[in-house]
Length: 277
Image 1 (cartoon, rainbow, N blue to C red):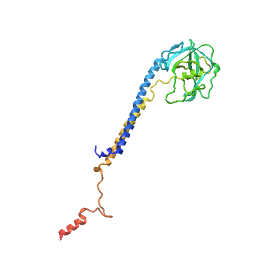
Image 2: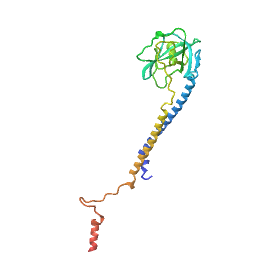
Image 3: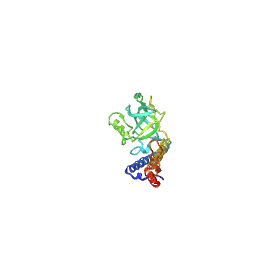
Image 4: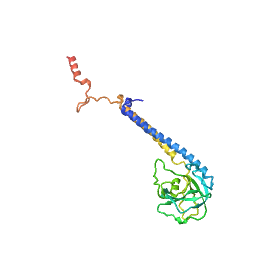
C-alpha cells in the first residue's frame, strides 16, 4: 500500500494497536459468549420440555440430590395436607410487570414428610386470606423447582423472620422448624390446591431461544466495523506522513505582480549584461 507506514512503529501507535486489538477481541469474545448462552438455552429448553411432559406422583419427599437440580422443572402431583397457616414470603419478585412476592406454604405428603409449596405471586398491595387453608387432604399439581441459594452477588438473608430474599428451602426449614427436601412444588395455573383467594400461579419461563443469537450477531458486527475503522485511520495517517504526497514548495511572488521566474533573477540579469558587453 502507498504511503509512509513507519509511524506505525512509534510507541504511541504501538499502544494504539494493542488497545484496538483488545477492544476488537472483547467484541469477538462477547459474541462467542452469547453463542454459548444460546446453546445452554437450547439444552435447558429440551430438558424442561422432557420433564414437564412426564408427571410423577409424590408419595414422599422426592430424591432430588443435594441441590434439587436433578428434578428441577419436573412435573409432579401429590395428595397433601396443609400443616398450618404459617406462610413464608419470598420478597422482591415481579410478575407481569407488577412488583410483589411469592407465598410459600408447608404441606404434608402421604408418608408424613414435608414439602414447601409455592402457591403463587401476590402483588405488594394485596393480601392473602390465611384462614382459607383447607382441612384434610387436597390434590395439588405443578412443577418441582430446585432450591435457590445465594450466588456471588445478591441479597443477603438475615436469617430471621418469615420474609426471604429467595426460595431457599434450607432457610424455609430453618424458619419453620420442619425438615424439607431441596425442592419446592410450584403450583400450576388453575390449581389453587383448594385454597380460596389463591395468588396468581407462577408460570414456566418461555421456552424460546431468547435474544442471544441477535446479540451475537451485533457483537461480531461491532468487531468487524472496529477493524475497518482502525484500518481506515491507519491508512489516512500513512498518507499524511508520505513525503511524495507533500505539496510543492511555494514560489516567490512579488506583491501585486506575477511570479518571478529564474530568468529574471538578479544573478541571471548580471550574467546576461556581462555577456552583452
